[in-house]
Image 1 (tube, helix red, strand yellow):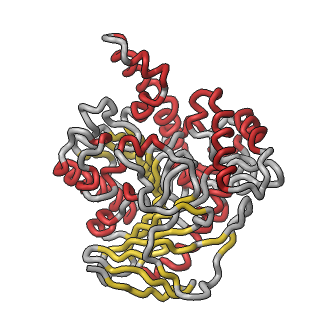
Image 2: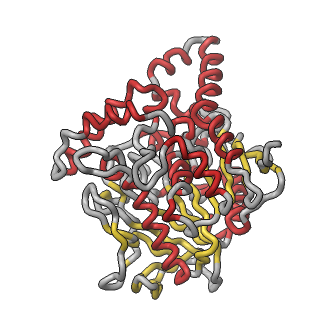
Image 3: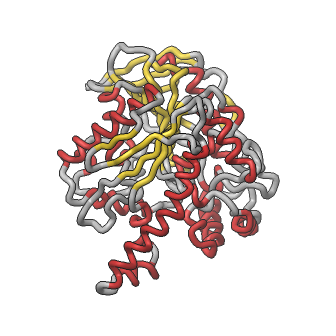
Length: 444
């Protein structure tokens, strides 16, 4: 049973839905943006917002990577639109106020995904852990990134996220949230986006803790030549091109990046030195300065790149060689996981240790023992989102019972929520069979 519920906010009236365990207000516009232009703040809604449908996804080409391991399109039942600057609020169905706010930034290599994809259902997190979860949808691909050609600035997707944070700061108290206790969390490109938000001057005071999951820190720098090659392809696109032509051109742009090896794994993304970011040489210095007022939980899975082995024909072929293939796969996954995820995540975390914040590093060890992926990229998603039944018979958790997903998921959600509420954990610890974490200390 559901019924309408009305929120009176500084931005105007918003109509959400009350469910037994949670209250949701979905698909709320937080900014407006013309094509290839910076987003603009919404002052006041002209009429009540009917926030009862999922936020539309940004227009995108079908991304089969994650969908293949879920077994269906993760954007099923979600419309796609160029007008996608919307967010969704989920809170426990209670009278409590001043609740911690957790802002979810979805991943998808900055070319795919949506905040309201069914695999990111925040109901268990909100209902169990007494937090408010805000899922943000932002512009992707050529609609939100690249730029620096034809008078189109870069970094629109990040500016979208800044506008979302401003909206949350202004309005979340009307949903029972505490604007002075906001945690950003995201996975993969979403985790990267969380780290990039720390570099933006305009976000100061808009969030207080960050949880960075499986961000590909090793792919961030020395990308100028690849970006130039991508721009060479993109600049022939007229600004008034049809949506279909933009998405077709985007595939050509991605092809132009393929010769750059691992960096082609996330070719869209930040362009340092262009608004609103510092120069590449100054990034770690700015992270260090900003971290003084931000508590950090950052980590990775043990075998991140195992997810991608089947997608790389040459690697897949070698892995199928009897005896040798198993050893090669183990080495390939270990080396590439370290290069793309682990090494520079450790460097980021250590760099951000200050006398006034808490910094924690974690590693997820949990995963299927039968699907060949183990503790691979995206394995944290079933632990954080959706009911255990959401994940039954999904390849990514093959052989893991719904009971185990439910039990371990509750423990992980609790850890994430405790950090969001307090900005701290113990000096070190573990969730048995799932993850280990430790507090980073200043190096002497």
